[in-house]
Picture 1 (tube, rainbow, N blue to C red):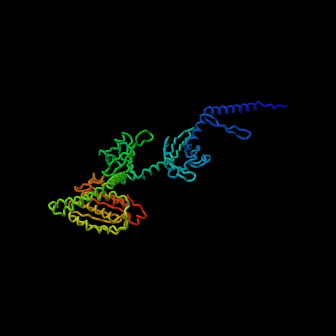
Picture 2 (cartoon, rainbow, N blue to C red; picture 1 turned 135 degrees about the vertical axis):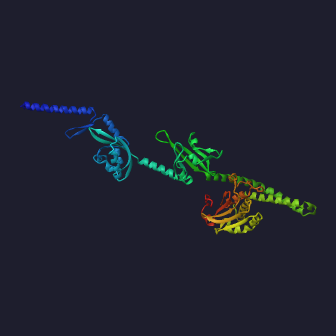
Picture 3 (cartoon, rainbow, N blue to C red; picture 1 turned 90 degrees about the horizontal axis):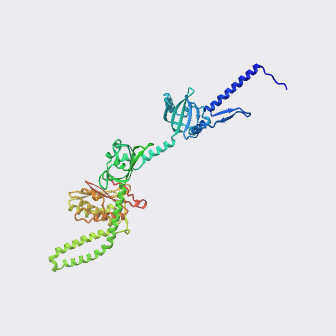
Length: 521
């Protein structure tokens, strides 16, 4: 076997190549040891094979790939050098197509100019909100945190991209919930200064409260004691929950309030919600009044007839005695006794009317015609007291009801009005349509109903008159209830108006009575 003998020059050249390979191998080993590479390529029969090194750098790469935010490295001109899967998901672009693209291609022209301006400042770190345009043309709001890096005298930008879509949606829903809430909602700062109000609060308190101290511009009072209810003082004790307060003497609120906290455990201010419970209180008072009426009615049904029967006998004997000569000298006293018995009998009649729970026979009634029939009666009373009656009757639909009871209701309301006026005044009786309902209004020019009486109005035996029975209004409320109507009132120092609101015949056949109608002005 012939061996090829190498010349000295060939051996020297081979030695140089081997030394070069050894130096190259040592360089690779040192690079691996120093963490300068995380993979390398070895040639093989079937082409090169990539080996990934499982070291500290691999952990960092794994962290970047698995993090919930988008992460990418871009060159100074905006070319994307690396991006993780999350960024690819945000812009809806396959990850393998991102490298080499310009990051600025995912920005609108205005955001592009804005980001160029920030980069020109050469800040080491900055944060800003932008909108990225996805591959399918959607805008994604993002927060970008950027850091400038230097590697081998080359500058790179590391970007952390946080998708704000859900946060923006949540903030938008919170804003809509705040603005569209039916109850007034007010935000104040740490010292109680109003900084934000919703539409419901603006409608009640106006815009001028912004910048003012809440407890000064919206004075609230405790109903039980009449003392001031100070939000800032109450919040020091803890969150305010379901506290009933009074505003402006006749508006009742249920207050809920609590501090607002940020990411840090520091107080940013407080949110105050005022739920208007004025109507709820009125309904409760109405239910309480009806309960008392029912109780009085049950009593009346039980004893009214038993009292009336012996009184009838007594009255009969008194009439017989008054006609005899033997009692001629006592005739005046007998007549007084008969008058008092008649007065007691009329009280019992009113008393019994509270106990009527059975259905009354109803027929179509022209309300204006009923008023026309009783006007001569009330005009006599008015003239005797120095007052006058004025009619303002409009054409209205017929209503279903009992004429006798409606006459009794109108008479009671008119007589109450006449007795409420000390000086010469006018009782105005009106009929008209309001929101599809027939309204009978009886208006006087008295001094109004005292505030302390208003809470108990309609309670049996409640009266402000020296000779009153306190049954006139309770009877009117009972008649209204039996007719499916609503009896309401409005009062001030210039007089009182009572409103008997009842559906017309066509409305009764098709629609329920709206008991929430505002009082006509």
